Image (cartoon, rainbow, N blue to C red):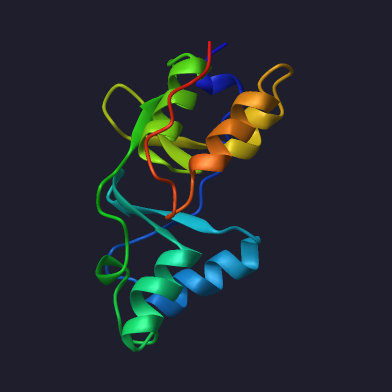
Length: 147
């Protein structure tokens, strides 16, 4: 099974120059916790509700004037739409992330895949649960999938 079969193709996005307030409003309106940050068609980062809270609010940054690029995670962790689900699960575990941006061969954004998406696949719930255990700032070591 490939990522294209479970990914969401409707991905909410912001620009690096948009304000944190704009990003938070978009998250609230769409009941989501993350937005892809795009420069043109290419992902340059991801901004989560946690990024806004921990990186920006805790530093006292003004959400009305602070651009997304000041709080986003600039290391873009992605997968390709034709990658096998097992590889994507390993990537999520290794990088301790709950979601991955999905790109095409030109590295243009085409979707997003989340742990919730993995958990909907029959037989993958245990693996998604194991990854979730390690997707936290307190996780002591990288997740290695069980055979």
